[in-house]
Each structure stands twice: as C-alpha cells, then as structure tokens.
Length: 263
Image (cartoon, rainbow, N blue to C red; front, side, top):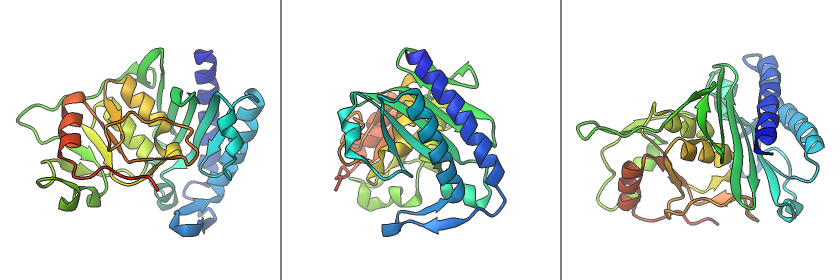
C-alpha cells in the first residue's frame, strides 16, 4: 500500500508541476490572504483543485488538509490524511524563482508514511516512505555530518539567529535562505546544508513531507521542544522545526532559550 500511495503522490506532483509551468513567470493573478497569511496565486488555487479532485477520487477514505482549502474538522475522523501544500514558496514563485516546491504527504494516525517534494523548474523529485530511504531523482541521499573545523550551514530566516532566541547567543552557524520550508528540509536530507531551523509556529503542510524525507535520510527532526512532530492536529500548527544530523541537532536544541508555544 505504501508503494501505491507513493506512486499516487509522485504522479500528482508531476501534474502539479505541469500546471505551475503554465503560470510561472507569466504574471499570475495574486491575492493577499487574511490576517497577514501571505500571498496566494491563481496557480496555487488551480493546483489545489486538481490535487483535491484527483487524490480524493483515488483515496475517498483519506482525509484532506491543504493550505489552500478551507479546513474541515472531519479530517480527524480518518486514520489516513493527505497533507498538501500546492505551492510551497509562493513568494519565490511570484518572483520567478525556480525554488518553489510542491509538497505532498500522507499521514497515518499522526505519522507521515509517504512523502514527495517536487521542484518542477529544477527537475528535483525528493521521495520517501517509512519503508524506504529518502532519495532524489532515484538516488539515495543522506544528511551531513559537519567536520569539527567547519561552521555548520543552516537554512533559516535572519531573525532566527537573533540573540533573544538563544541562551548564550546563537551557535556559530553560516546562514543561508530558501523560501520553501519543504525545500529547506530536503536540502538538509540531501546533505547540501547541515541544518534547517524555523522558530515560529509552523503549519503542518509546510513540513509534513520534508519531515519524513529528512528523517529517512538520517537527520533528526523535531519541534523546538525536541519532540517528533505529530500531524493532523485539530489546529494544524507545530512548535517550530529543527532538522539536522543528530549531533548538530542536539547542539542547536540545547542552545535554544525558549521553545515555541503554539497558539
């Protein structure tokens, strides 16, 4: 069943990419969401409609959680649930950057079992299940272990390294940035960066697929409390996210001043 679910997500990710290409760098219509939740484009909505129709038709007994669909509490009545971000990194998409991603996951009783993150403009397909290692375009990938004489690289917003978030100042990290949280987690899984960090309440759809991919690549993935994330919560928010190799994860978590509290 896991292989069937994974193949379903892979096909859906490629179909999402086909839609995204029709709008990318072609001035798609953009709206601002309520409560400062960021922008949404006509491409996000078109992909969301396609995914909802195709995936729910294929798995009518699975629940549905997506950034671009009004939440329905009945998803919690299902053992399985799709957790979807039609376009993760919408700002990057609007700017014409190639680093936006489609993030698709299936969770079973709170734990992600199949995951796909696809970057159509870069032709990068990251996948994992609980029964197979993480891979990129069919090649196994592994999280990194920084050498002692190197400054670990971290993907994070600049504000995450403000001194106020750390007990004795932030650890010595070389900061980089990508708009998509899903892509950040996959870059850690791939070993191109040593860690990713977000110190704010984090929507499940941003990190569900990336969590399993990074974990199956050997990274430790937790919220800022050090707890492995559980998905399909009544309010689909998590207390931030840390993904890194085990030793670096321990260092980052130990130095944090205060874990994120979910509203």
